[in-house]
Image 1 (spheres, chains in turn green, brown, cyan):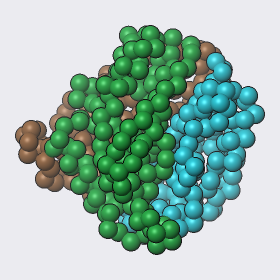
Image 2 (tube, chains in turn blue, orange, green; image 1 turned 45 degrees about the horizontal axis):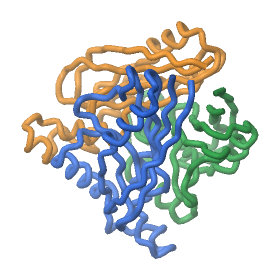
Image 3 (cartoon, helix red, strand yellow; image 1 turned 120 degrees about the vertical axis):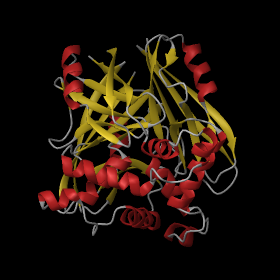
Length: 139
Length: 139
Length: 139
């Protein structure tokens, strides 16, 4: 067994912008040549999350609306009042959803459903560069 | 160190039906003969989640009620309106909770609390077959 | 590759008390001497969670308030009514947030953001001893 660590850098729009990482992760997994193992995907920073979802435009809208409902971009927060950066809601969303997930690999491919894509959600309140770490552990 | 990948197939009732996977996982871990390592449990598909909880009937009711409160089966969603499958709420619940967890193993056993069971929650809006992947990494 | 399992025992105040584990985890990772790998952090028990956040007092307050908003310590629950331990809300919070996370390691250090700390959140309704398992897998 061995471990390979790769980086994905991407530009996001914030406010829970959702980006499909699956094609990039599939190609990273494929390049390792590992047949069996798993893939860990981790969002660096305290205002982004990783999860899976059916990546289609209507559901992207639904998830964004539910996140707005859960912790609105207009909510008052001690964090925003203290630091003046207005992104208390971003932190709250990220801490609830968590920074990463692990996906199993078999026959050189991620074992996911046909309508299950791996996504990064950037909850921050501005466009920014994001760093996602992808680790493949396998044989 | 080595990795062993196993599949659990089960029948669920949907609407956040909660099923205790612990006995099955304990037996998979035991069969590997690994003393130290960890176990990753992953729900294939975009409408199910894995977590831990005290698996007792009253709390099962509470969790289901909180999920209904969080994203009701009667909520309107762009996903349901677009695709007509009425399970937007299922996707939202699943993406928030996440598709998998990892549990440490020591002395050949999962390190969990006495009242901490590993569960799959099927959020979909119908009875269906579920596929859960269990990977044991250890030595 | 090898795996090393360590235990953290700590005293918490309950009601979603949030404790920064980063210094302890940094020192565990450093002691392993591993250059590349990952670290899995798992809360034993069904009323605690692990996540990441910017660990600063204002945001600690915000997260605790949002958890209270999500599942109040005064909420009625079947669990509390059945068992008389008044901590149904603690279980609900813990099951939603999940019991653990995995963090990548490179050059002997956790790859996290400058303002991203690893925390345990004890949702229980009393002061108690907590057991967190830290596993380092690497080379």
